[in-house]
Structure formats: structure tokens, C-alpha cells
Image 1 (cartoon, helix red, strand yellow):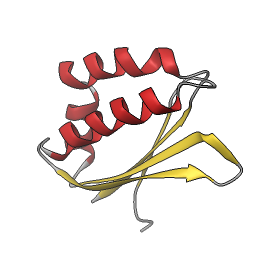
Image 2 (cartoon, rainbow, N blue to C red):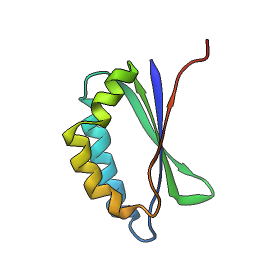
Image 3 (cartoon, rainbow, N blue to C red):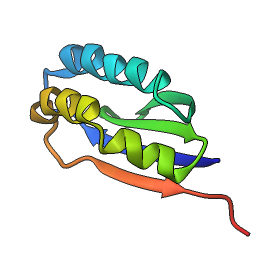
Length: 95
């Protein structure tokens, strides 16, 4: 299993719209092959700084979802609400 940390920073005043759309992406990811679980966290010092931590069965499953047309279409709606580029980190257990 791997974990994927997705970091986003939302532009001022767009939080409510972002919340609704990002929730939709996570709901779709739940049905993607290999998705195990996920949660969204908010930076306690900056309400516009969001993290999604998702558990995937394998990196191949994550890459399939990340490159899917469905995710790309949803991100096309979400990206204009962010004031910085999305940062994605794939995490694995150390050997």
C-alpha cells in the first residue's frame, strides 16, 4: 500500500466552492480501482491550505487514477480556485 499526499492552497473567498468540488473528486476516487481510503485536513494556521491523504493499494492504481480523463476533467474545475500549483507526494513504507 502507498499513501498519496496532495497539497493545495485555495485562493481567498473561494473556499466554499472549492470544498464542494474537492469533495466530489474524493467521492469519485473512492470508486476507482485500488483506492483504499482518504481524508482531507486543513492547516490550523492557514484555512486555505488543504491536504488530502489518500491510501492506495499500489502506485500503479494511483497513477491510473491520477492520469484518468475523469480526474483531469474535475481538476480543470478545481485548479482555477487554487493560487498555487498542486503538490503531490507519493509515500511508501521504508524498508
